[in-house]
Structures are given as structure tokens and as C-alpha cells.
Image 1 (cartoon, one colour):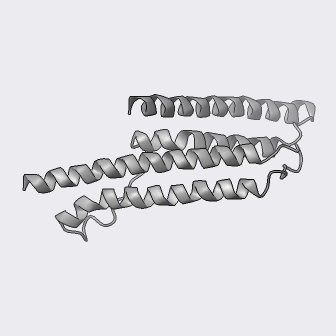
Image 2: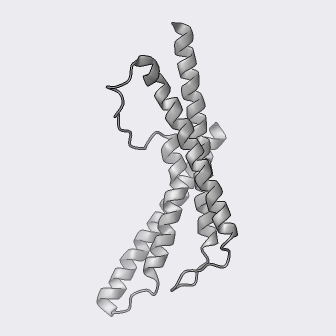
Image 3: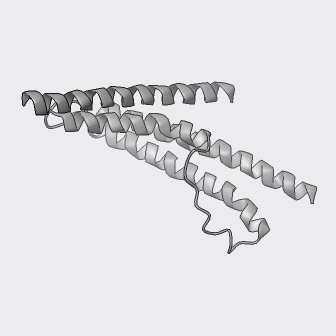
Length: 160
């Protein structure tokens, strides 16, 4: 778990560096556009690619740290036993969903190796593979959290 924590932290740091580069790029693009009437060609595409990296490189770390927004909609409708199973169920369903997303991204990438952006002519496949990797890693995080939540439920049941 320590290795996973460090790896996820490194990926989030990389996402932060991409965000910093995007911020500098955007400021420079605005300066060039308004003061010199010479905006960067393809700046929207570059921003889109950077955002894909930022989201999928940091998603797993955010989940690992419990940084996602949680809304308690079912608490008032469920009794204690079902309520204890909810985090486990949600984590396993989320893990399955993100594993499916990762798989579909790999399949999509394998069918579109030659796809490039309109302005910059940058290949899409590296960004799709980063998205697939980030989704698979998030699926792993959710699976581990689901197992941990299931252990907590089992411990609680044994205590009673």
C-alpha cells in the first residue's frame, strides 16, 4: 500500500505540473493575443489535451485520499445493516464501471491509432492511453476501498 500511495502521489504531482504548465501557457496565450495580436495556433486543442492529463493523472489520488464529493441521499431511507453495506457496494460498482471505461478506452485506442487533432495534428492515442491507465488505476483504488469497507462490515458483524 505504501508503494501505491507514493505512486498515486507522484501521478498527482505530475498532474499538478501539467496544470502549472497549462496556466503559464494560457497566460502567455492571452498576452500574445491581446498585446501582439498573435495568439497561439491550436491553444484550445492544447488545453483539451492538458485537461485530459490533469483529470486522469489525479483522479486516483483524489479517490485514494477520499477527496471526492459524497452526497448522503439514502441515509434516511436505509436501516443500519443496509447502510453499512452501501460504501462496499458503491466502491465495487465504481470499480467495475471504471474498469469498463479503461477497457473501452483501450479498445477505442486500438481502432484509432491514426486519429489526430485538427489544428496541431497531435495524435490522440497517447492521451487516450493515459485516460485508460488513470481509469484502471482508479478502478484498483475503488476495489481496494471496497475490500476495506467489506472487512469493516465483517468486523462489525462479528462484534455483534
